[in-house]
Amino acid sequence: MSRLLSAFLHVLWPVSCPVCGRLGEVLCAECAASLFAPPLPRCLRCGGLFPCPRHPNAPRIRSASPYNEKIKSVILPLKYGGLRAVGQPLGAAMATLWERPDADLLLPVPLHRRSRRGYNQAFEIAQGLSQAWGIEAVDAVRWSRRLPHRAGLNREERQALRPDAFIVPKKLRGLRVVLVDDVCTTGATLTRLAAACESAGVSVVGAYTTANSVEK
Ligand SMILES: [Zn+2]
Ligand SMILES: [Zn+2]
Image (cartoon, rainbow, N blue to C red; front, side):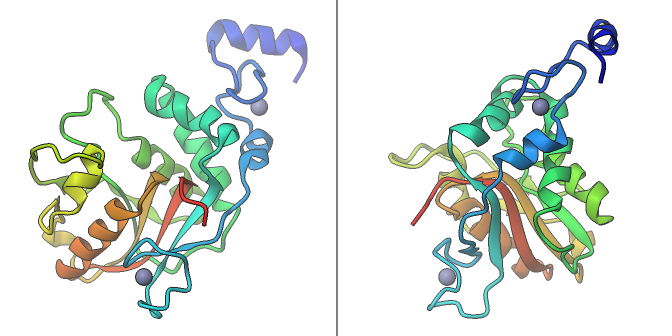
């Protein structure tokens, strides 16, 4: 893109790629791809390494990158900088890493009720995956209720440990879904959401996250 055109776009659309700084780009596809280095997948039943000796038939959690400084350059603006628009190109770039999953629906981890973000970053990423894979993304699950604090876990992890942490709508019964989140830490949120889906009659075929904070 010419410098003049970039400058013109910057006036209309004052954004720049968080990776290379190019004006008029929310996130360049090449920049997104340069951030990725998929770590080993993890077990969607326990969060351990895949293949899992305890759950040989479990679906897997796939991540585009370890949670390192490079991937933080897009995740932190998306989560804490109000840069909602980064989510979709990030998801679209992630979709090129893997084959299209055999699923009916992409199901993002819901935004916590008390979050002030105003948008669900996991849903933004899911919409990018959705465009690339041609699978509908629906922000359909909800956290069920507030919980008291418990030391050593963040809020979502504390809540994820409860068997009734998620409300999975009945309309999803019988569907095959893929879970989507921005960062997988202990894996507790995804394993609990997968269990909640299964007990609601929803089949979980896998999970995809932008980053994975555990490297074993
Ligand atoms: Zn860029
Ligand atoms: Zn396992």
